[in-house]
Figure 1 (cartoon, rainbow, N blue to C red):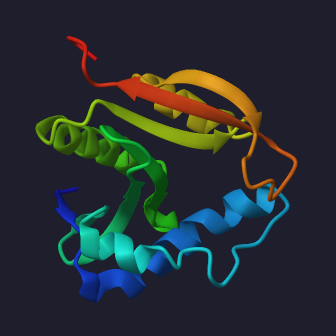
Figure 2: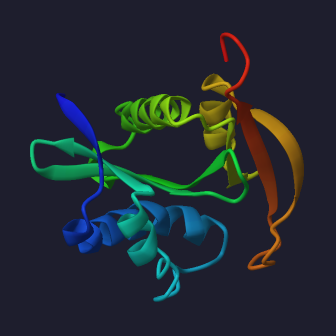
Figure 3: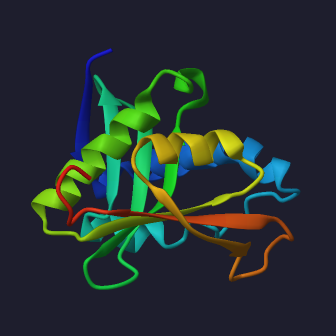
Length: 160
């Protein structure tokens, strides 16, 4: 596997959208939901701002991370998706490391993310990358009754 991590190009927005939808369908079904047609409508602006990153294997997009900037000095890893045929191969971990390097270089102070409490494998994955649980609670938008785990990684300290 010879991956390259790039800022996603606007011309590849459709591919990114399809990859994230394909990767997230099983996750959302486990939550008792389906992906709404307009769920990722914010991608168009995000990709233009340079807030979506892609893992390429040759020219194929095999993973993507969509970020948001909820507060000054913070990046939220809003969505992390890997092509279903490539899941469980370390791509998500690799992408998280790549985003962290970019964030540090840009002076970002913290990375945040939210995942469903029932997705214990994801909580473990993020914990292995140094994210700590900030709190647990219902989703702000209330789209389903599942408890969310709000995680944070401080990038300011030594060795974080």
